[in-house]
Amino acid sequence: MPESLKEHLNLSNVQHAALALAIFSTGFISLAQDSAQPALPPAEYLPDVSYTLTTGLLAGRMAFIGVGGAIDGMANPTLTARPGQVVQITLINGDNVEHDIFVEGFAGAHSPPVRQQGASVSIVFRADQEGEFSYWCTVPGHRQAGMEGTFVVGDAQAQPERDLPSISRPATDVPPPPDPGAGPVRHEVVLETIERDAYLADGTTYRYWTFNNQVPGPFIRVKLGDTVDVVLENPEDSNFIHSVDLHAVTGPGGGAVSTQTLPGDRTGFSFKAINPGLYIYHCATPMVAHHIANGMYGMILVEPEGGLPPVDREFYVMQGEIYTADVFGVPGHQAFSVTKLLNEHPEYYVFNGAVNALNDQPLEANVGETVRIYFGVGGPNKISSFHVIGEIFDRVYHEGSLTTEPLRDIHVTQVPAGGTAMVEFKVEVPGEYVLVDHALSRAERGLSGTLVVHGDPNPEIYDGPVNAPAGH
Image: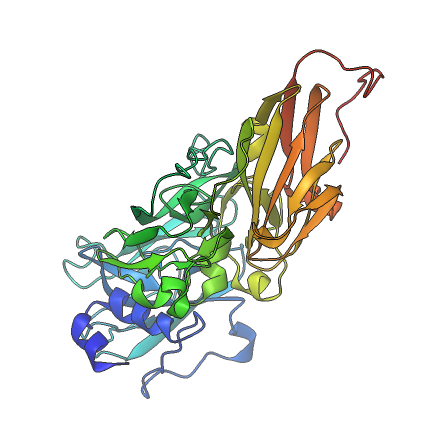
């Protein structure tokens, strides 16, 4: 680790130390156990489920901090097991203060103390009763200072709030175009990296990481020759370092090298928009795919000289993937699965962050209007075959290029992971039009939206009864 970073970090704060390590890793933390670690129990008691916790400070309070997998970086994470499973919890001393761990209600679930930084101890016990239990540090004062979490066996896990607000950014959240006749101007773009629980699907919630509290992040709109001052703010209550890489930037890391931002810090950089186009931006802190999958992506438009042709309606739509521990449709709060991410096996595919987000808040237009959709794939892994059922794109600006001649009369356009496309068409017949990725099984995992077109019938273009919604 560079000396300058060592000086900047308070290494007694395990959160900062672990997060700094993550910059130079792939998101996994490996800590050696103390040589005095007791031998594991006999083979018949080897664990079915294992957790590793380290000790330190988060947001100014003492905490158990998750290491690895779905609990990585979480303060006092909820630990779960099925009835009858053998559970192993390894505790690592991360702050050179004496600690232990005790899980109420289970024989053998109380560790000896670990007194030196880097030392570790494990407890192994059988989850032989169902319910919700507490675990804590029994050193006097430590539980009161924040070192307490929840251990759930079976189906007794506390149900999440069902009325959590949606994380989804409305597709209509597009800023107006800049004045093409104005000279170069300077913009300040402030991106706040907010980690929050929100609605994923009916009865299901997820811990999202966001730019400015929604998925996707704000649509940034500038013009060729403008200068952009990017400010990244990471609140003190965050658990992770975050950053931003804008594909519109010419410079190292797209700005990510200047914005690796610790909780409670603020960073920034400036760039000049020298290439027109529609670009992705995303968090670029390792594991980068983890940050993107949790919702940290958006788009920036650099308009060409003279601006874009005017249209009646503009919409902002981004496709993403969510990798949950449980399979699609399981209710409750869903944890992130690093295994499914690395295997590129998402459980959910979403437009604008959540299942049915663009059905609950559909796109709307009137017969005779022109529509432009700024479409991007946050990913982090899958290609999209974007299609609007019942419409043909009059123009497709492939891969976000605004200086090449657009493709015309396109029905499906392929958009790579981390890529964009701008599509335009005129709506001529009223009705409901379904937005899909034409890898259509993904619609069964949450990936569909709706464009509602209002107006009088147009039998010259389409004449027939509407007996059922469009299939997908």
